[in-house]
Structures are given as C-alpha cells and as structure tokens.
Image 1 (cartoon, rainbow, N blue to C red):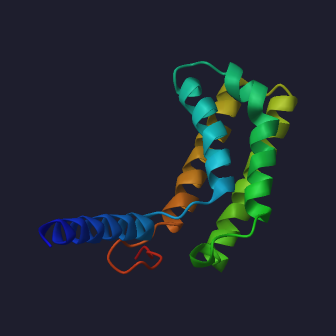
Image 2: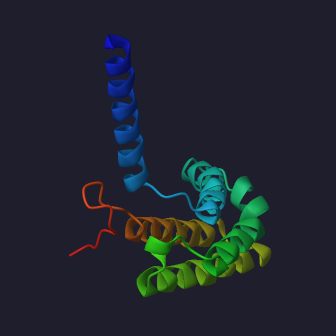
Length: 139
C-alpha cells in the first residue's frame, strides 16, 4: 500500500509539471526553424561577422515565408500574429534582396537588427500565460 501511495504521488507531480510546461509553451515548428537561422546570423553579425547573414539571407527569407504561410497552433491563430508574421515575411525578403544587391554592411546590420526586433515582437505576441493557459496581451 505504501508503495502505491508513493507511485501515485510521483505520478501526480509528474503530470502537474508536464501540464504547467505545456501551458507555457506551444511548439510551432516553423517558428523554431526560423529562429535557428536568425540566431546563427544575428549573433555573429553583432560581433562584426557578416558572412553568416550574407550566406543565409535567402534561406531566412524562405523560412519566414513558410512560417507566415503555416497553419498556426490554435491559440496563436490571431489577426495580430498573422499581421506581424506578414511584416516579418516582407522584411525578411527585403533583407535577402539587400544582401543579393551587395548592400553595405551598415545597411545589412540595420535591416537584420530590425528583423530581429520584429521576431521578438512576434514571439512576444505568442506568449502564453502560465496561470490561465491563455494568450497574453500587452497593455
């Protein structure tokens, strides 16, 4: 009997922890694939290394388009998020075009920095309140 109580208590804690984690984050594959390219281009650019963004700008634009066109998880299927993703897609394409046209490092930096800020704007709009399990809205 004592072992049964211990096992049940462990299961309750495990289920509770899983439920809390699930309410905080929701997987969105296209977001993660975009973020992977953003991280591997933005952070080197901060250190003065423009080679990654110059090599991957078109890829990042493609990932932004796929993210914007993807069916979002239900709680993120909101006009505000769709609008922000549309801007992210447009701005990613503009950055890819700038890189293709051999824009200056300064212009690439400005564009990528703005795109990075837009990415954080989108992800901020996708936050889930851990207590309510609902989409957070900024005041």
